[in-house]
Length: 227
Image 1: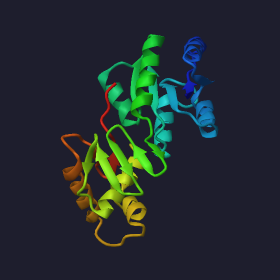
Image 2: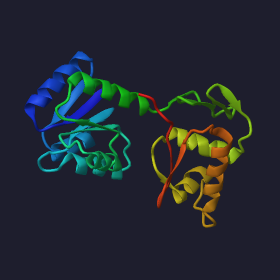
Image 3: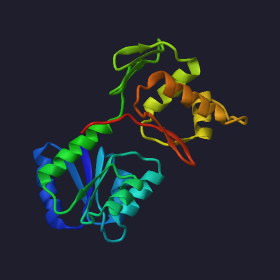
């Protein structure tokens, strides 16, 4: 795992560097938000740890900027702000978890591992897609959910499910889904997406909320997780 830590306190950075090294995790560090954004753009990271209060660009602005660019890299916020409203702001900006200072390095390492597990991208090899819930064979168009075969999907419902599985947690507008899944610029009724989402929810869910409506934007797919 390769992690970028953006933290302006050198003592905290040194402590985290030591603990990350012990876990066999490669840690790179930046001391302000601008430097952090520059390193983020140049590198490929499995997870980001951002302090909220940073010079030049605060961590929340950095988090929002990354999310606005469409990147769903896992982000953990570090902050001394511990009110519920502050946490809500953090999650609304796109943070995956929130750790308040002072914190135990061991506890932070546990949170890092938990976030990495639940945001892990689906495994896809030789036409097979596997997630916590699903196993899909794109060649034979077979679908299993939690080990049980799903037989009643239409061709377009299958295509839509595959697209969502390949892009977990990403938000797509109806126009984007029509273009990516239907394969052309669609000038008709966008409600065809709503109909297909409704049918998928009915056919493959069993009380889980897998297909999330993002009001004013569109939809995203996200499987429930357990830390």
